[in-house]
Image (cartoon, rainbow, N blue to C red; front, side, top):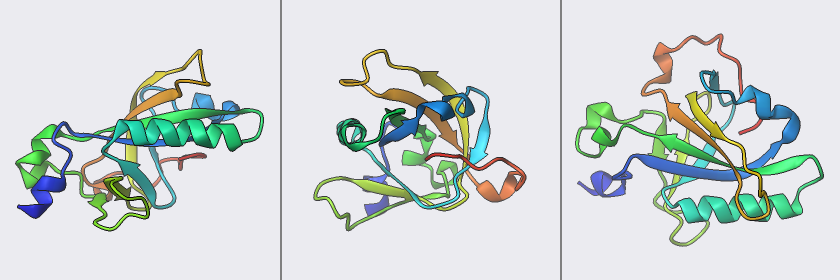
Length: 148
């Protein structure tokens, strides 16, 4: 029951970061890919947006802030068989009240939609992805993300 309390009720997790402009074309709707390392996310969209904007201010020219929205199956809130097996809730995060989750290395994602921002100083690009429920059933030949 404690685990149920930590599962995002609406099925969304968020990640803020920077994206080199030259890599935008990789994240096109329909693309399926893996990430080569651990990847953190939050159940709080505001945390991700603030992180993306702050990272953008510190980044080099040619980068843009980006927010990934991970669309988990909302049925996973009540049905454990519907949960993504590649993500875990961290009870102890480095930031207080962050509600941090971590995707395991080589997790698989499917790009469903992209929204390219025209006002990067106040709102990041958005990349919406569906994580695979179980990466072991997906081809190992998928490309790895150049940025995550």
